[in-house]
Length: 217
Image (cartoon, rainbow, N blue to C red; front, side):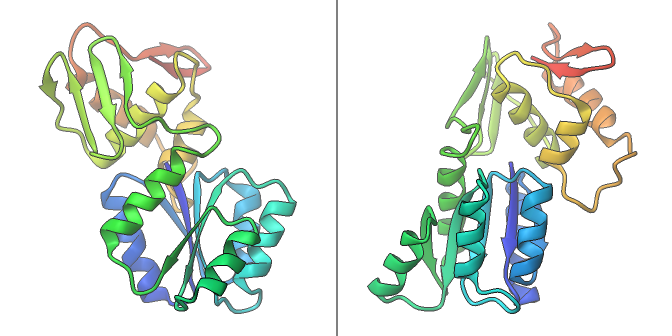
């Protein structure tokens, strides 16, 4: 799952990003409204966590522009105001959910995952294939009754492959959806992660390599 955090308070944004990465999500940051719009047109995010009080371009205007341009990401707006009027205003702009600062991190994670399940394409609560199952919310994966010890990136790649429901997922798409923008696009990290994942999944093999195209389960 790939998420964009938009907040002009760098320390808070980095804290949220670090926590969500521990949950296996790929996280990008934007520190103002204009940067957020630029990044949302380049990358296909599942969820955008959007602070309302932003420099250069107010969060309301960012939300309005994202909706106007057909952005498929679900939008979670953050605000320091807890008034009903502000919540109604934010939702009326097209935001999918609203969270008041300060908030419990566990609630933020729960809301992001709930929105991701409504994203396009949706992320189901549990993904399965034969004796293999993965729960994104619980961050656990099982095969044949055995819990798998997967790293956050291995979990993210497995989630994307299972969510594709048999379709081929290219290495480029895996890199874009499971890693953040700081990752070298020419790195072999996808190949290495797939190799480790195959070893942990065991036999019989479930990840198929489609030459010159990508991977599928």
